[in-house]
Image (cartoon, rainbow over all chains, first blue to last red; front, side, top):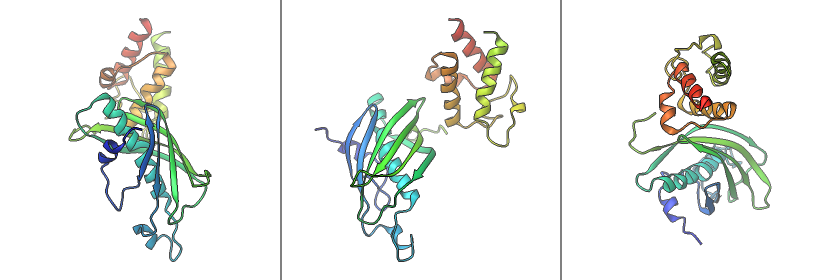
Length: 151
Length: 83
């Protein structure tokens, strides 16, 4: 089994804004990974009052970190082993179907639509432990070399 | 395919990615795609991918950089189609 530590180490996030626990598989065509929303995540304090539910923006972020950024780092490392890629979100369109509560583990399945001219566009879905669809969407980002001045 | 046909099709593809404050009438042969038509770099890639499909051509990374105005895009498409 491949060790995905090299990809996880390149992620530019830390607690409380790292939403990747594990990668299950990664290839030229897509990525699968999981995250467990801990009971003490900071946003449950205010979303909602006395009724903690994971905000949709956080679900989108979780999809983007696993489905777009991890895949972007992988695809970039295939092309250019030197340098550290920086990925900025350029577009997201997501439908939300089910809530995610504290302690829930989610699985993200992302399929690459294309990676051309530095733009990575992926179709993804998030499933719960019973394999039910939580949300799905299309997220894209621009992959550039860190310290590059390109906009 | 005449130059006019290519131009019309190019214009109809650019139109899709124009921001709300830029009208299709603002598209002229010398319009700069990013600076004048305000198409962002992410949408510029969408324009190029649509052009590839529409004209059945392949555009390379360095050619994207040369496609800064409507007329330079037109030129690159014309060259590819004739090959």
